[in-house]
Image 1 (cartoon, rainbow, N blue to C red):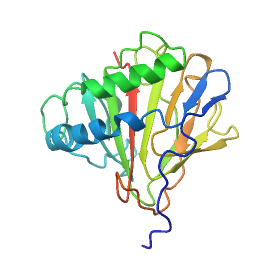
Image 2: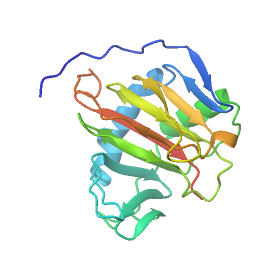
Image 3: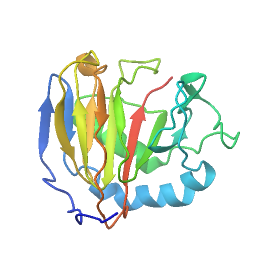
Image 4: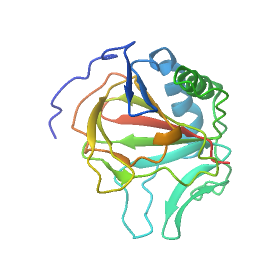
Length: 218
C-alpha cells in the first residue's frame, strides 16, 4: 500500500472548538506530552499488556488493535462488552496508568470545565490503514457524569459525531496529531466513530494512529 502523505505536526495547534453543548476540541494540547506518552506506551504498557484485536459478541474481529492501562480495562468478547480488572490475554492486572497520562487527561478536562476528573481507565487503540470504529456509545461506565477524554496521536483521522440514535445524521471532524477531544454532560451518550484510516506516515507513530481514551469506569 502506498503512503499517500506525510502528516503535518500539530495542525491548528492552540485552536479551541465547541460542538453541541459540551463537545470540546483543544487542538495540539497533547503535543508537550508526546515524548512521555510514547515512552510509557513502548516501555511500560505494551510489553505488559500487548495490543490485540478483540472479538465482538457477534464474533466479528475488530480492525483496531487495543489494550488498556489503569484500574480496569474495557474489553469485548463473545460474552459482551465490559470492564475487567484483569487482562484476559495475560491474566494479570492491567498496567498502572502513567502519571503523564493522568496529567494530560486532567488538563484537558479542566479546559473543558470538567473539574476534578479522575480517570481510572485508559483504552489504547492502534489504527492501521483501513482500520475503523463503527458508530457506538460509551455507556459501559458506572459514572456517566464523568466526561470522556480522547487523545489523537500520529496520522490523522475523521471522527464521526452523531446524535443519540444510531441512524441520526453524523458530522465529520478532522482530528490530527496532538488534538484532544472532551465530551460529557448532555452530549455524553452521543454516537460516534472513526472512518477508515487513510495510509500515511507520521514521524512519531510511523504508519498508524494511536488513540488514548480516558474514562471513569468505576
